[in-house]
Image 1: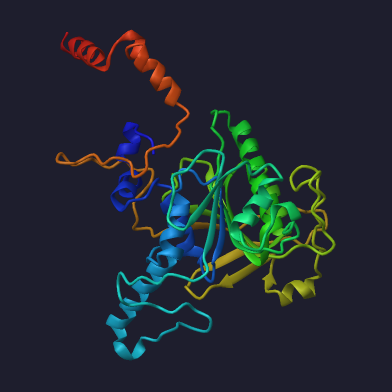
Image 2: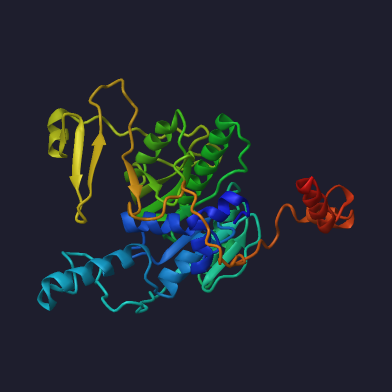
Amino acid sequence: MGKSSKDKRDAYYRLAKEQGWRARSAFKLLQIDEQFDLFRDVTRVVDLCAAPGSWSQVLSRILIKGESFGRRAWEEKQARERKIIYGDGEEGGKDGEGETEYVTTEGELRPREGVKIVAVDLQPMAHLEGITTLKGDITHPATIPRILQALDPDTYKLDEGQGESGSNPVDLVLSDGAPDVTGLHDLDIYVQSQLLYSALNLALKILKPGGAFVAKVFRGKNVDCIYAQLRCFFKSVYCAKPRSSRASSLEAFVVCQGFEMPKDFVLDPQRPVGLGAQVPVPPKKTKEERKKDGVVDDQKTTARDDGVTTIELDSDSEDDTKWIAPFVACGDLSAWDADATYHLPKDRISLDPVQPPTAPPYKLALELRRQRGGLYGKTGKEIKKAREGWDDS
C-alpha cells in the first residue's frame, strides 16, 4: 500500500490496515463475491499475480478459516434481519432450492474441507496459512504443470506431463495483475489486455466445466472485443466495478461464470487466445430461438433471486459481431467512497502495513540514497531543517 497523502485519506487504505488486510484491493474481491457469490461450492482456487497477497488472504480467511466476509456475511445479515421482522418461524436453514445455509450466529467459523489454493507471482510473497505460493511467470507454458503439481502433489508428476488436458480441474481462477502504468493510456490498456489473455489461456487449461474466471481489465475503446471472446468460453460475462475501485480509474473486472470449452476447439500453445487463435463464434439464432431464450426487442432481462435485474443487449444483425457486457456496480451504496478524501481525526494513530514489501523494486535505490547521505547528499534531518528554515523566511 502506498504512502501518499491521498492514500492516507482514502478510507479503504486505512480500513485495510485496521482489519488486517495486506492491501486495499481485498475489498474489491469481497464486493465482487457479495454480488456474484464467487465462492459457492469452491474448494480449488488459483490466484494469479497474487503479490502482495490480499486476494489470497481473502481466500484463506473465507475458505480455509471459514470467516464471514463478502456473500456469506451478506446472507447472514439478511437472515438476522428476517428473524427480527418475521420472528423465529420464518427463519429456515435454506433460502430456496440450492441456496447456501444461513448461519445466524455472528462470528461462527465454518471452514471447508479439501481446500487447495495456489498463488502465483513473479515477485516473492510472504507466507499465508494454507496457501501454496509459487514464483513463476504466467505467460510461460511451464507454469501450468507447476500449478497442477502444487494442487495434487501426491498424484501429479511433473516428469510424466499429466494434467495438460485439464485432468486436475480448478473451480476458480483469479487475476488481479496489472502492469506498471506509464500514463500513456493506449499503451497501458494494450499491455493490460495481453496480461488478461495470458491469464485466460492459463485458465482454459485448468478450469473445470462450470468454473469461473475473474480478471482485471482496463476499459478502453475496443474492450468489447475482449468481452466477445470471453463469451465464447463462458455462459455469462459481466463487467464489474467494485465500490472500492476509484471511479476515476479505468480499472474494472471481468466476471466470467459457467466455463464451457467450445466444441472442436483445441488450445494451441503456438497460437494462444488473443495472439492468433481463431475463437469459434457461436452461430446466430433465429428470432424464434431468441424468444425462447427470453430475448425481446434485442434485450434479455434476467431477475435474480437477490432482487437484482440484469439487462443483456443483443443484435440480430448478421454483420454485427460486437457484444456489450452487462455493467454491474458491486458494493453497497452506503459504503465508503473510494474517490472521496475524508478528514483524519487529530488523535489518529498511523498503523504500520500489515505485511511490508518482501522485495520492493525501490529497495536498491533506498540503500544507495542512504549510503550517499540521503536526498542530494543530505540526511533526512538536514532536509527537514532546510524546509523549516525556508518556511520561516
